Every structure is written in structure tokens, then in C-alpha cells.
Image (cartoon, rainbow, N blue to C red; front, top):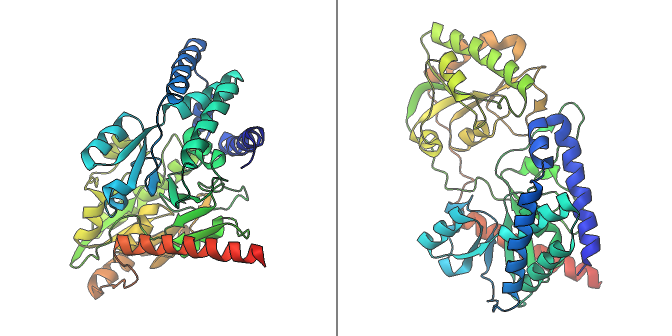
Length: 401
């Protein structure tokens, strides 16, 4: 297992690379990530962390379950497992979630505290102790374990990824929580999961975003929840919000401008149309601009009936197609990202006026789509776990020969 100084050096380098990108692409996020706690708060964190470390040396560590999650982001995935096989890391929300579902719980507080003290006060001795404790816990036995991260760019997940990368029998996996897109500006995106040995992606097309080095691999899980094909047709159109003001104001303004034009053109020919705000959208502004706002639960919306979804490269456009809905991808020179997934139809900004006719034709044909590739969630998850095991066995065999 690599020494701690080497681990800290790699962690700092990875964090800085992410920050360098955020400084230009997501300036608000850059400010959040580089804004340190006050001196008083750092002192408070240090006192709490010292107590936690002291307490650990007098506590008995139990063997870890087979599956460990760094957040409760994938509850449907966890529900396919035996509760005794699951541990969730986090804070108060995760603790309550574990109590309700019978899962083990691990408090992430010391990891956050140690990381912040290391980054913002230069004190790495306590962070060293946190890493040492983590390595001890995750190396307690030699049975296979799987640690699932939501990303590897937040403080706790970044720490777990680098501190435990050499832990024996531990497979660190980042599960994608959306679709990545190509940067048409030439700027390389900072992809969640780059530091992880394994990644579970939603589509084969997403594998190209990750390293193809010999000891790294990506496997296609599909959507991390059950997929039910929409059956009946509903003659409605959903305009899928592209981004938020805080993340990219220029792209946001361009996308809203186009959506307003499309919305008005579709209403003019009698098509029922809704705008689906992006999670980072200005909801109040959306309500002022669009008379119909879609707020239905996403999975219910996708599975209830076949609709037409129109967007640039939002993840929801991909999800809609997986559920058997019709997807239309918009292309515009002003929008900086390019889709990395297939859609049913593509329409460029100089031909947006053709959309009403295209949609009316889709409604008239009323053709259903059948997606046979989706097994149930447990089957898809077990397949990916088996692929990890096969990959490890093959890699070790190659090392011996």
C-alpha cells in the first residue's frame, strides 16, 4: 500500500486539476470549493476530530459488509441486496436512511474534517491519522468488498478513492449519476470517476471518457434503477432544460432563447408542450416564461406514456429514450457541449422551424419502440460485479505470465 505522503501528493494534484477546470467552466463551484472555513470553525473541527481519533483507538472494528456506498444516492440499487450486505457512509440523513432499511452506517465526519484541516490549515498529521484508520478498517479481512462512490471530486469521496486505492480485495467503483458530454471547446472535462479503477456507466458510449489503461475498466450498468417501457401514446412534448444560471449563464441564456421560440411554435399548431426545468434552473423564471411546467416525478413521467422529449444534451433526453419515448436532439453553435449518446432525431438551430411538422408526423404514425436490452436492475448489477471479478482474475493472470 502506498505511503501517505505519496497519497496526499496525488490527491492534491487531482484536486488542483479539477479546480483549474472549474475556474473557467463552473466559476461558482470553484468559489465554493476554494472557500475555506473560518479559523474558529477549523479549530472546532480539529477538536472534534482529535476526539474521534482518540475514540477509535479504543473501539472494536467490525468486518465490513460486501457492499459499501459513499452516499444514499442509489437506494433502488441497494434494495436489490440483502440489508446485512450493505453499509452506507454519510451524515444525519444517511444515518436515518440506514435505520429505516437495516443497513450498517459509517459516519463521514472525520474524513471531511481531516480533509479541510489538511487543505485550509496545512495540518496533515490529523488527516494522516484519518487515512491510517480508513486503511485499517478496509483491510481488516481478505474477503472481496466493493466501495461505490457517487463521484471522486468531493472531499470525502476523493479521500476514499486515493487513500484506499491499494487496499487488497477492495474494488473502488464510481457509479455514473448522469451522462457526460464532449467539450467542443477542446477543454477536457473533469469526469467523475477518473481516479477510480472501475466505473459503471449508463451507456457504452460513455466508456470513451475513461482511461483504457491495462488495470482500469468501465462496464455498462445502464440506468441505476428499474426501466419500464412506456406503452400508450400521449401527444405531449417535453422541453428538457439544459443547465442553470449558476453553472453556465451563457449556455443557459442561449438554451432558454431557443426553448421559448420552440415552445411558441409548437403551441401555435395546437401541440401541448411543457418545459421541464433543469435541477439548477431558476424555477421562478421558468414559471414566468413558460405557461406549462412539468413537475411530475421523473420515473412516473417517463413510464406513464410515450411522449416526445426535446433537448440539447441533458441526461433526461437519454433516459426518456431508454424508456421507449421519442427523443429529439437539438444542435446549436452557441451551446458548447456535444451529445455523446444517440437520439431518434437530430435538428440543428437553422432548421428548428421544422420541429412542429416533425412532431405532428410522429404523433400521426404513433409507432411504439421496444427496448429489449434492459434486464431488471439486479441482473444488470450482478453482471457488472461479475465483470469486475473476471477482469481482476484476468489481470492477475497476465501479471504472472
